[in-house]
Amino acid sequence: MANENTVRYSDKDLEEFRTLILEKIEKAKHDLDLIKSAYMNDGNNGTDDTSPTFKAFDEGSAVMSKESNSQLAIRQEKFIRDLKNALIRIENKSYGVCRVTGKLINKKRLELVPHATLSIEAKNMQ
Image (tube, rainbow, N blue to C red; front, side, top):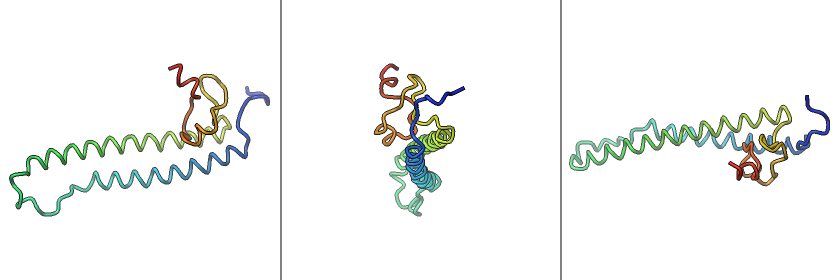
């Protein structure tokens, strides 16, 4: 049971972080859509029969490109999930509190990495 002396960011600060996170989620979703559309598009411009010599190289490159786009999409989905989890922490007013030290995470760090759950101090201990 948390008491009133619990260290946390003010409601005003939390609202600023909420706005920042919502903006980041929108941008991340847009980026994810771009990655997925690149992944779904096979890049076929109807030139298959005009360059048979380079087809093997091209196919290898396409597979590598799909794999890297797939990895990017997975990372982007995790980023969005982490941001949504940060919104939940804002709701329950535990946002910005280091899960290891229990101290407030530096505001500048949260502005740069709004889904952070560890302070620099805790991160360095890892």
